[in-house]
Length: 265
Image (cartoon, rainbow, N blue to C red; front, side, top):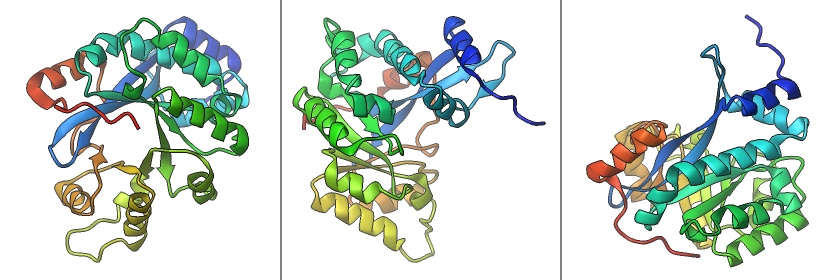
């Protein structure tokens, strides 16, 4: 069955009907096995029960220039749902994906400042994840991210290794964390040779003084390989699937939260 075409009206209606939601996937510190934070993942749940994947509606929102409204909704939901948890668990962080337009325009800075004001959440607990895109303007993005770091935020370069200009972004954008795309993690096999490109990415991040998060970890073999290679964090179904805020609270109450405060780099 052919998927229907998503337009601006549908997106606006989804926001008005509160169909845009957020789920949270734990990010695990490999050395301790504890949850160090979560990534906030946007979801669109239609009234008829259909789940629209972000891969379908986010590019449309960017093309229609209404992704800023979705960004605001995600930030608002994160603050509302996780605010008390972040204040009571200062070792935890939440990673929020930021679209190229919000980075290039600098719009994300006043948005985060306004939403965090009076919340008790430290900026270091909010990681800003930047994914490359043709719309990103490197010079303005560099200024935005430098300001974000000065304000205490941690900046992560997402899906590293997938896009054609990742090396340029790594060279020119001020980042603290490198997120390795699942495509490279998938190549780890217990009885096979070490993945050379993955090893190069890990070594490059170490040489640059960056922390590494490996995405899409699905089994213990991958987790052990990454830990032995010096990767600090990982996320994936091997550890936990994306979950609702209520499920996350139960997950943390079970003793999975990190014990040490994050470094405000």
